[in-house]
Amino acid sequence: MGESFYSATCEEDFVASKSGGEEVFDVCIVGGGIVALSCAQVLNNSGVKVAVVEKERIFSGASGVNGGFVAPGYALGIDDLEKRVGIEHARKLFEISIGGVEKIKRNILSYDIKSASVAHGKIDLLRYKPSRKEVEYPERMRSLYGYEVKPMERGELEGILNTESYCYGFYHSRAFHIHPLNYGFGLARSIQAEGVVIYEDSEVESIRKTNDGYALVCAGRTMSCKEVVVCTGGSPGKDPEVIRKSVLPISTYVVTSERNDEIPEKYIKTRCALGDNRRASDYYRVVDGSRVLWGGRITAFPTSRKKGIEDQIRQDIRNVFPGLSGLRFSYSWKGVMGYATHKMPCIGRLDSGVWYCTAFGGRGLGSGTACGEVLAKALLGDEESLGLFKEFGLKNTYGFLGKVAVEATYKKYIIKDRLEEKNKS
Image (tube, rainbow, N blue to C red):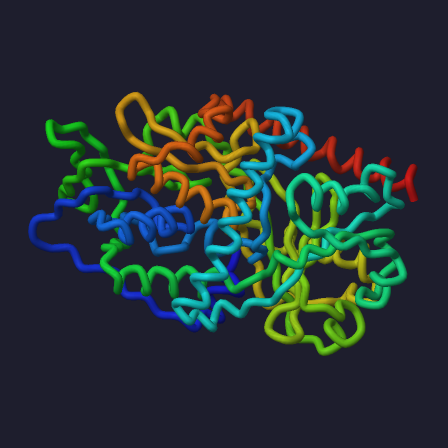
C-alpha cells in the first residue's frame, strides 16, 4: 500500500531523545503509540523516571494511521459487555473510556496542539428501520450511563447526506475526530519537554530479569529499569510469547480522495465523523476541506495490492453515494489493529512481572488513552480500575487457525448484514 494522508499532511515535528551514558529508569515502556504515551504522561507527572522505547517511529503503528475517530466504548459492544459482566460493571468500564476521550480533549487544549484539527460529533448510521430496542437506545444510555445520544430520523439525515442508504442515526456530541499523527507528535513533543525520554528506531531484542528489576537489550545497548510495560498493539514484534499468542493482528484499509468540492457541498454536508452499524462497517469523514477519508474492509491476511483494495473501497463508496462513483484517490494505506478473542483490552501483569496493555480492536484512541492511564495508576499502587479488566485476560488466539476463523466470521457478517438490511428495510 502507499503513504497515508496523515503522514503526507503532518504539520508537527518530533525529534526523539538521544541515547547516551548510563540508561537507568524507573519504568521502560515498550511501544510508541497512544497507550504508551498516555501511560508515560501519567507516570512522569507523578515523579517517575520513564523511557518510551519504540522500534520504528512514534505513532507509526495503528495509533497514527487509523480513522481518527475519538469516541467512548470498546470493540465489544455495550450490549455484549453487559451480558458478560453485568450493567454496573459495564457502566464503570464505559466511564473509563469516556475519561480517555476527555483526556485527549484536555491534552489538545493544554498543549495547544492546533494541528490535531478537532472536528466535533459522530453519527452512527442504520441502513434499516430501527427496532424498538434501537429506538430506546438513547434513553437507555442516558439513564444507565449518563451519556447523551440524540436520535436522527431519515429526513434529518437526508439533509446532510445525499444518499438513500440510511434510515436512522444516533448523534454523539461528546465524540470527535482528529488528525491522529499530528496529535501523537504534538503529545510526544510535549511530554518529552516535561521529562519523558522517548527513543525511536530502538527495537527491544530481549527483556531479562535482574536482581534490581529488568535489563532491556535494544539497538545494541542495555537499559535498566525497575518495571517494564509492553504496549505494542497489533504489531507485537518480540514481545513475550504469551502476549504475542493472545493478540490477533487484523488489517483494515483506508483511502483519502482527491479534492472535490462536491463532497462537502453536495454529498457529505457535515463535519461529523460517520460510520454505519454493520458488523463489517464503513466509516468516513470529510478532511482537508473537500476530501473524503473512507475506511473498512478488515482482513487477517493483508494484501499489498493497492489497486484491488482501492477498487473495492470505491465500490463501497458507490453503494452509498452513487454520484461519487468516479472518485479518485490521492492516498491509500492499511492499518493493523490488535484484537483479543473477547474484543476487550488486555491489561495486567505476567508471572515474570512484566506489565502489558494491548488489543484495542480499532478503538485505540479513546480507550487506549484511558487504559494507558489505568495501567499507570496500577504501577503507582492503585489497582482499582485495573481490577475491572481482570475478566478479560490473555487468551490464546491460535495463530493461523484464529486468522482463518476471523476471515470466515467476516464473510458471515457481510451476509448477515445484507439479509438484515433486506428484511428490515
